[in-house]
Image (cartoon, rainbow, N blue to C red; front, side):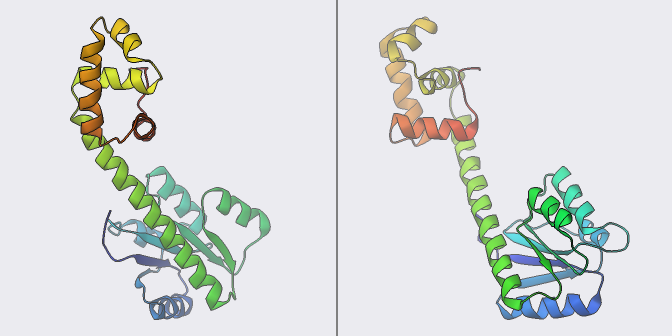
Amino acid sequence: MSELEPIVYIVDDDVSVRRSTERLIRSAGFKVLTFNSAREFLASPKPDGPACLVLDVRMPGLSGMELQGELAQSGINIPIIFITGHGDIPMSVRAMKAGAVEFLTKPFRSRSLLEAVRTAIERDLSAHKARSETGELRQRYEQLTPREREVMALVVAGQLNKQVAGELTTTERTIKFHRAHIMQKMGAESLADLVRKAEKLGVSSQK
């Protein structure tokens, strides 16, 4: 998991709102980067570590909602907190359904924004941790031989050693040998643990 400092990005074309929001979030101890347009944000380097985006809904050029869509299409899963002076219920529902953490209408309470930022950062920290764990599992899985992957897929599908041996036309003793190596390489403490790891990797008997 990344140990990088969390970053809060603020995208708002209103300079006074942008600066006041930046001061507020910095006062809570967060690193902040600001942008005056969605296009400027899109052109910037994206974070390697945990982050969130405080985003104005209505801006010249690319709107906040359109930026949310572009980020999703690009596979950039940064949690978004929308702020707006023109929000309505259908818009907020649409934003939340698309994954936004919060939808705040100006003027909003400082506490509400800071709570939303903390929630967003925690969400992204959890996502980074999950991706890191999956990446480690993927590396372990890549260490398996082709035959070990075949055995693993059948074992996690619920087949007994005897059944796996029959399907792969080998001996039960050989399957036990493969299973021991699979458990060791995958760092699995039990069959249930191996099944959970396989589910994270999307491993099934459909090889």
